[in-house]
Image (tube, rainbow, N blue to C red):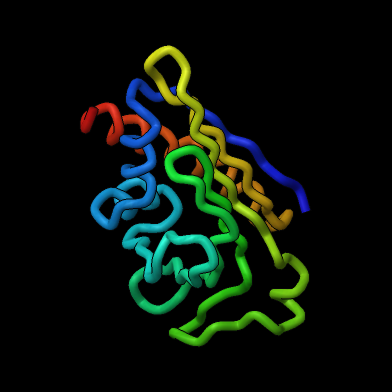
Length: 147
């Protein structure tokens, strides 16, 4: 499974970018690039179980593998959620799990370099290559407007 990398420089401190990425208020605004109505259930604390979904009970289940606020977050995707039911055992899910999504925030000269690495099954690669640049543009705009 390929790992894709996306990056942008943001004129805001890492803590501001972090808050933009992971707050209840702004998370749905930048993740709309993937799916309107995106939200999450759970805590961003290391070891916590999370659900990322579209508001109707469909999405992904994951665990926060590492959290070093405001520098690094690693999400370990474990499976899917369909109509509110988690699937971490089916053959289809086992083909691509675990899959990691990491966020690295590095301060440099008053700006933040945000780099995202995401493991993507081949069938989702095109969608991710289109959506991530839009998502990062939204993170940048939201972070800079709040700075």
